[in-house]
Image 1: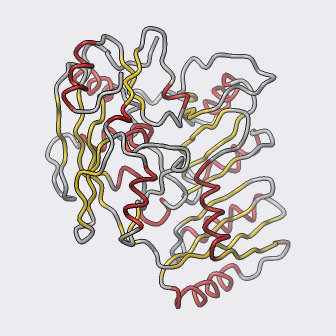
Image 2: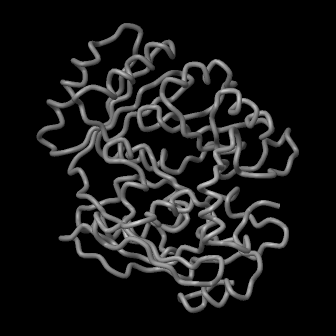
Image 3: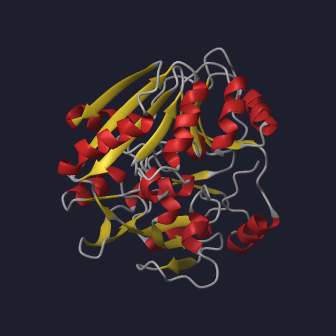
Length: 365
């Protein structure tokens, strides 16, 4: 089913007992149907409905590709500050909100939850529901737009979304500092996160331990800000530095936004920076990136999902598998995209029961 209007979405929901809404399909672990589920392809509901650059607000249909939105905003010197990943692979606005995904540049202003203003969706009983609006202070009672962030399509089918947008930095530069050991890199990351320096991205990469720092602003101000950064770091011993600017720097961040790390599961793990050292002692060698000053981990996992589930539980963490097949040596079917501790609680269950009492959108077996 590929509806092209709200009316067709309403009809599809009312006529189908089990539905899985899907956008661009870039997060396969979240958009692969379970037994008995019919896929509702939302890419037919695409297009920007309202955009006034002077008001810094954009309203678009849920199936609109992020690439289309970013291109429109760029023509007016604006962007989505939560830095959604998978733009080049065809991710949509609705899928990004449902998965609750933000990228490294969320460091400066916040994640997708901080920029969504309003939603229209169809609930499990086939009713069209609106929440929020087109201004920042618009919510009374439940903040439905924020409830939809990370809902994985289990609260309803997103149809329309409103976002606030920001002016793009006129120039950017990226400074990479590679350390011989993880401990000094973590210490430097904590100090930088609490410093008066402002970063568009403050990431920690492993193997080797590397801090990736992105600055943005007026072109004439960047050289002095880079000098302040170098002075703050104090030229620590046993480090290697690299400065990227221009097209090379832009290309590097496009590569990061693709999160394409080969075989294995790609897992998003929210965490606190203080847990990184202990987690790293238990994680096997592999590709991973801690973004937003260590508050979010994108992890490439090459073993059975069950082992990661146990590891995350041991550290009091939860994770969500976004995409990827099992490593070729591991033959398994992913039972659930959710790993680690169970964050389900009575409030979430009551919300789901209110919006989808017949469990039409449930991902559970």
